[in-house]
Structures are given as structure tokens and as C-alpha cells.
Length: 265
Image (tube, rainbow, N blue to C red; front, side, top):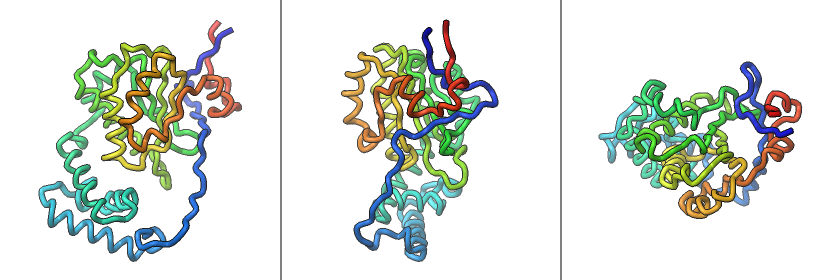
């Protein structure tokens, strides 16, 4: 009897996932001026400073939600840059300009429907047990020459935005799963993989908590060796060569075993 994992559970069933790399408590060695998280007054001053600098130096950038005057967005990039106003301004200006040029606000289900219908990537209907949205990629369904490269990029960004909209209050990160079962060299796409991680690094910093590569076949090894140096710090978030058995025993809740597995006779 063979068994295979069904990443989409039956309708109405929750998606149970246990992190294989729980975050450790961070020990703070010393208090420095950049650690504004403990000083709301300093934090607010920095947000205002960045906001005013963006208005003065990058007045051409759009305003409003995800614009140069979005204080929530400004604070997020300050956290990413360890409260360095100068670094946050530089990275934030680049991100806002990219969102405008890419047309992120114009993306919709209809605009990505053609590529989405392949089923190669989607946001799972349910959160994991830590209430994190889950973005799933089924690599064997991705054929680089099948669609225009920009169409794949648009689907990627649309799904990231969709996952972020599903974040419950108090949650800030999403989980990524690459299902590599059936993967072949015809599915390899270093250019797109680089775009995906660049998007998280430059435009959605600190939003990706972990990436699970499931059942990576031998042919994936050279692809990963080429891709890993291009992923920058995000390469450390990747857990590779996870087996179905490992997922059942260590990642997915055993109590949901019957809803997560499909037995094939």
C-alpha cells in the first residue's frame, strides 16, 4: 500500500502544520539607540523622520496604503533595517517605486487567472496551527516556456499579497511549501526562483518565516546548488529534502492524519 500527501485537505477540514524550526528566544546583549522597540517615543520620531525624508527626497512616490506616508509600512521597514532611518529610506523608496511600476495594486484574480488555473501555486484555504498563511508551489506543474515570464511574476506577487491579507491580528509572517514530487529538469527555473526570493528580500522583508522543500529528487540538487547563493539570507530559511514520512510525523498533526493523507491502492 502506497501513500502520498494531499496538501489540500477535504473541504471544511483545517490545515494542521507544526513548525519544524520553532523560533528561539533572542538574547539581547546590550541596549542600543537603534533598539527602538522598547522606546515608542523614539520609534514614533523615527517614523516621522522617514516620512518627512521620503516626502522631501522622493515626492514623486505615491501616497496612501503602501505609499510613502504609510506609517505602518515605514515602521515595518525600520524594523527590517534595525531602525536605521537612512537604510530604511533607501529600501523603502525602492520598494514603493517597484510596487507602482509593477502595478501591484492592479493585480486581481482575473488578471492572473490564466496562470493560476495551472494549479502550480496557490494560497492554502486554511492557516497552519500557528495561524500563519501558507503559500504552496507545486513545482511539477511549472513549465517556464508555457507562459510569459511576467505572467508568472504577476501570479507570484498576487499570491504573496493574498497571503499577507490573510494574516490574523498579531501575526506577521507566512510559510512557504515547495512540493517537489515529480519535479524534473523541464520544471527548473532559476530565474523565477531568484525573482521570488528577491521579492521577499527587497519588497516584502521579514514576511517569510520558513520554506519547506518536500521530497526533493536527485535532479533538484544541481538546481539548488545554483540557486542557493542567489537567495541571500533567505537561504537559511529553507528546509530541504523533507520526506512525506517526516511531514506526517514531525510537521503535520498526527491527529489529522486521516484528513491529510490519501491512501492509494
